[in-house]
Length: 532
Image (cartoon, rainbow, N blue to C red):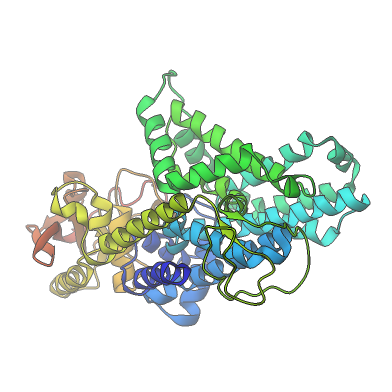
């Protein structure tokens, strides 16, 4: 039963990785890697650094774009294997296979472990850090010392997580809350190693602070303005309901049941021997409560809380398994070979001779329901992103983001033709960062510009009109972000718009429009209007 499920998830993942054009933000972050910097406006720099290194070493392709995901996924699941081996000893392989399937069956994790965004590195380094820190705390409770390398390893990996997204701070807060909640750990406040570890973790801020000092703290201001309602306070019921509903559905309803039951009724064989459940509780509760509160005042997206559930999966695996004789923290060798078929009666035994215990599955209907729920989502996701945006079957306007994954071979051909017609090495302009990034990726051209009312990273790359004076341009727009008259006015002459229709299997997806501009006069090429 397990192999077909796991194989199905892995095949869908491979189809996505090899066959799907970059999501607009994947292309955006790839483009960051072509412009090396200390940090960036929207996020810290690690994803851009990694993309830049991989592109320099291996070139540009969907495989290279998502090759870092393969590495992070390997580290991610290996860390989970170490966790379940630590928690469940001889029964680790059963728990690991269940955990693996639970993670893949969560739409949130299936998607964000697949996308070449910042999140796959964020959750990988956050999980490693939390595991190392828990092992340090457990050792500290045993001998009053703990292993320093685990503490410093936890600090180093949370620093790497902080170089992915600022939300890595939730892991630090959760671990800190766990120390405060356990009186036995209060003496750590007098241990100088904690402060050295804090300094290591804080080192992630160095490139971020350098960039912000150089750019008037624009990134920090962006996050404050986005997350905090600076006007008069009023409850935002719509964003709150969106956050709660999408969190419930995309983590998976069955997962929520197993998470909450595992927290409410912890396994005594675990909770009495490790601080793991305590840390898992605080790493879950602090970001969840914080982001729920933010959603009531401003806006919070469901995937901002992706860190919160990381430590709950190993506990949830225990919710679905029953072993007659627990073997906590035992150390016999374990195998990653698939466990035998699950039994639902006490009379049936696992099929292999080296199984340490008869293994029984609990809540079988709930487990299988979670798997088919996840497979349905994963299948629809791959179809939606790789073959045909399903929203195009019911509306001509909904889901404009997903429509942007299609038609780029045609668009690039038309842009190249317009570039040849204009001549004189024109510059390329798009009316939104998504369109500009996708075009830059398709053409493998780091010099594509984005001109829009939204401040984005393009505004910090192109801060002066002078290099473009007198040059011709090819301008790409769409119905989502139409070309503005103010932009056309910056040219002495512009052509009529040429429509580029994008279809898939005979279904209309969207239109792009190409305009040729002649002899740029100057104006708002970038939001930051000074030359450097």
